[in-house]
Length: 168
Image (cartoon, rainbow, N blue to C red; front, top):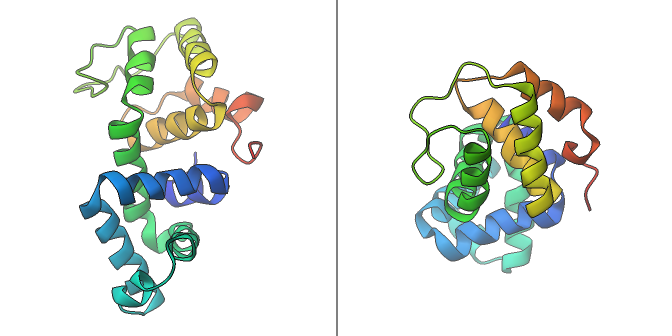
């Protein structure tokens, strides 16, 4: 399974840019935390990055987010983007799996899930959302939750539409 910093390394620059732009436009504290962490790893002051044109700054930030040292920051960025911007995708997935949730948030995930239900739930997502966003969500879901479903891992490794790096 891919960790958060690896997800940033494999996702398309367009999607990675969308995630950073979401933080910039919709969650200033998250954006500021990310900017400060990138500045710290690059051994520069945050103001150095702030003075760069936004496109250049975001490119710098995305390059840094692919490094293991920023795993926690990358994870926070992806989780926030999923929970705030992709909430309907989360809700659709959990509803298709018949897992009780509160607007996409689950208190207790089952240890396993039926293969047929899982495949059907993934098909629902792929029919409704961009495949790359679905792939990022499912990778993050399987990596960042305590329930690590072997059948989901297998599908993420074998289903071509869920392979990161295949999307432009």
